[in-house]
Image 1 (cartoon, rainbow, N blue to C red):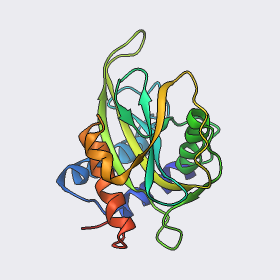
Image 2 (image 1 turned 60 degrees about the vertical axis):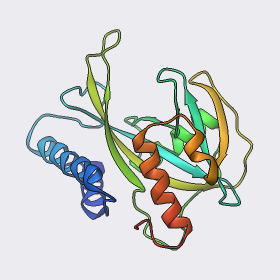
Image 3 (image 1 turned 120 degrees about the vertical axis):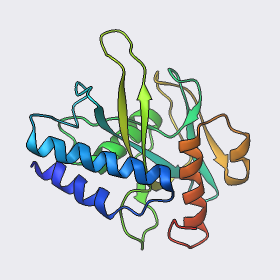
Length: 198
C-alpha cells in the first residue's frame, strides 16, 4: 500500500461520522482503500471510474468565523465548497484540498480548524458524476476539510461563476445540496465548541 493510501485509510478509520448516511460513505471509502491494496487500482486517479475515485474539498471559514465561502459551480449550477481531483504530485489529500482552494478562489493563507482539535476530516461524501465526453458515469469519494482563512479577498477563475461569503444564519436560503448542509451542521457544532458532534 502506498504511504498516501495508508495515511488516508487511517484517517477514514478514525473519522467520527455524523449520521447513518456518512457511516455508509465511510464504509464504502474504506472498501475502496482495501480493494486498492489487493488489486491494481489507483483510487486517486481521475481515470479510475469503477466505482470512482477520491477527491478533495474544503469548507473555508472567514477570519471572524461568522461566514463560510461557497462557490457557484459552473457545471453543477449550485453553491458548494471549493474542491476537485487529487493530482499525482499532491503530497496527500490535505495538500490537494489546499491547492484546490487556492486555484479556485486565490485563498492561500489557510489554517486547519479548529486549531486545538484533531486535524482530521470535517466530512466525507460520495456523490454520482454523470457521463460526459470521454468519461463514463462514476462516483466522487469526496474528502472534506475545514479551514479558517486569514482574508476574505477572493479571486475567481473560469471554473466558478461566482463566489460568496455566506453568513451561518443565511445557509438555508442558499441553493445547495444535502451533503453541503450536513457539513454545515457539523461546522455549527464546531463553532459552538462541541467538536463537530451533536
